[in-house]
Image (tube, rainbow, N blue to C red):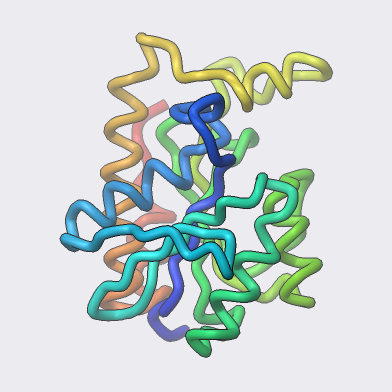
Length: 194
């Protein structure tokens, strides 16, 4: 498994959604860009914010979550990054806040952003880094789900949030530097105490 060339963080654009749980992919990419000294610039033709770094590109789609695939497909096509070279960072409500999980492929599992990517890329074969956003008591049920996902992190969640953003950035940069398999071997095993 090669190093990814296109790193995608999923989220929703605009002030309304800034700092919501659904936007943790954007938060992780902002930290990666900060570490790499890379600057995002808006690319209207691809409906996204793109930053170049030595090993490839960072992308924050400016479509809404359920249209993310359009932006990812367009940027990947332009920069010749195949789905297998595209690492997607996004929120996972089945993992508690603080937990990370790399996967090389898989279904959308109810995530509209991933569903859009699968439809636009025509495959489930792209790596992803899932960042947990579930409360300690587990996945919210029924109507509480939307409120949780689109809600902002609570004050008591901030320490765990800041830690997981740093760990997720470490995980992505490890995948870029050492390859996806090496990063998976480290970060899928190292999890915070629950």
